[in-house]
Image: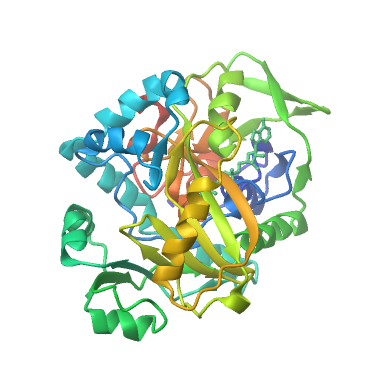
Length: 420
Ligand SMILES: Cc1cc2nc3c(=O)[nH]c(=O)nc-3n(C[C@H](O)[C@H](O)[C@H](O)COP(=O)(O)OP(=O)(O)OC[C@H]3O[C@@H](n4cnc5c(N)ncnc54)[C@H](O)[C@@H]3O)c2cc1C
């Protein structure tokens, strides 16, 4: 950031109280603005509630990878595939899907990895600084993130991901079977290959972290209103009022951080942006009946994660393309319980929660961060896909800089909405 002086205070509305919206609201309030967050849900109880808890500083690989189009028939047909497309939803998401496939070429993936690294490298630093500023302690553990494979063949299949990480300067340790055992003694012996990213943080309760940020925001005078954004009244250079289901709010600046619903909220502003969702499920399992894990472990060949949260062992799954309105279909995640028992011998899965969340997905997996096209007083902060928890505090720093008229310390061109 070029300068740290306080900007002129403005009335700001943030739409969305997920981890991204709450971090933005907190940073804006810290700058002296008068901030109101509009969301019918309590802070952090949308998608930000149920993730796997990784602050993934090395996340540089998009969902659309070279050759993914070859996997589409399998996704449509295989009931155990970690990626699923609901064929009834395909016509509706076709424009997004075409952009998604276009983003999967080797040269696009290389450019995307630069853009993602540009944000993710600061993910942990930004959270650490925000937590320190508000005395938030004991929620994030420095235990890293382990990814394991049952064979050399399955490990080699994902070589491009590690090569890309290495090219972007991400540090990780490739592990032998013995080294995997030392890190996680209770994992099945069948995992012979893997790697550990020690710089990743682990949020042991994602909702607790968002709540802690929300409380800090309220202590500084910030306000939450439990309302749904319905309509903007437009002025000459952008919106000046937000009509919700329950009231009207005037503001000088509006921040859209409504996660997977940001496409709909942007539409209220007359913008057409390609935001869809990669739905993800979790089952929380009673940890009394689960052997101990020390960190989140990705069971790479089956496409699920086991994360030892404070409220239980959390099994999170891959991505389902079916939009935000279709009801949950928990069959696939329940099928994974047997695979989880294999991965963690001795696990007696007692389900304490079944949950569906909506990752806010751009076709290139890169979030949209920056001014709304053609509007001087709207900032966009959404589309963080698989790494919204990781990037929330970093996004908030950039949004606060833009709101203050400070020059951000990175080039925001790769994150602009105009790229679509
Ligand atoms: C299974 C799974 C595992 C994941 N694991 C990880 C992980 O390990 N690490 C990581 O970094 N990320 C992970 N993610 C991704 C991460 O959870 C998301 O990227 C992140 O939560 C998105 O945050 P958000 O604030 O943008 O959206 P949300 O948390 O969904 O918040 C959006 C909010 O906008 C509100 N809203 C919508 N419409 C309106 C409206 N009209 N008016 C007012 N408010 C509105 C909603 O009510 C909601 O509260 C995972 C996701 C899933 C599903």
